[in-house]
Image (cartoon, rainbow, N blue to C red; front, side):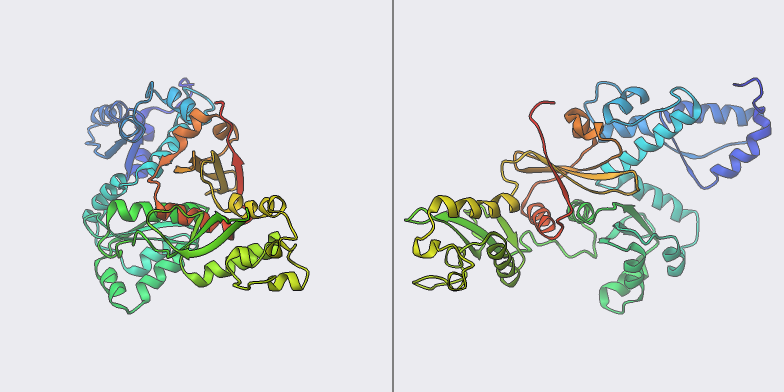
Length: 398
């Protein structure tokens, strides 16, 4: 391979050009950087660049791995490697590993340091220049000051459009952002659900000065169930209760009632047993032959409850082991949301089905996130609105 390769002095100028103002990323970066500096020293050139080592980052962000060699890490994370131990194959595997590490870095330590370094070496750009560099894709964006600090985090289905609004609005918060912004970084997610979950987690983790503190209860209503004295399964919308766990949650009562009306129509339920009617006799839907008569005991509790249970099963992931599969950042990629035992575990991305069919690889792909009422509300609300979302029940065996 080296017999026909150019000598180092023949490519040295090109190496300087393509690495200028860049951070070198490598697996065991100290070794590669030392080789480069030695070769440039022989030519009398003081080569100096910032570096990032994916070995060190992996140890921080993916702890407790058996080995941190590139091959074993790639195998554990389901990263396909072609041309192993050849420059191109190893470089592409390192790229995929680094993207995964960036995704797992919820504290944004890597990005903040890079932005700080970049801003110290150049004059702060104009707002229009920042906008021109942004994509019109779904994702999470981070507005930084000149020290690399994140001063605002948001999510959008069109990042460029949303940042343009921040830079052109005249309200107090926008004006402060316009004065302080030095750079905008972003992470494409493809999926709006992944963007919502990342935004929720990272605002709480990084606490940007221009994000209002997320209210822990941005929703006020819950869907509850109970069995009445006659054995019928009742569903009802009511304000959230601290000591009771709702089937699902809603931001306001109007949206909750609209949801319940859809469920009544979809599953042919009784308005009385759904909290939509207080009639003492048959409900209105019975009078138009759209209720099977449970309200006047014409339908048995057994038959009625089968249909009512569908509402609970379709809108709750309590005690379920499953993954939600949505759009990814590229055509050949999907996003995955992991739920185990009814608990939200985190999010990730995959290219090949074997990465999610293997529970060990799946757990390594996932960026762990906190399970709380906010994440439950985000996921259940998205499930209600997006019927194309693919839901896969997980088997117990690995």
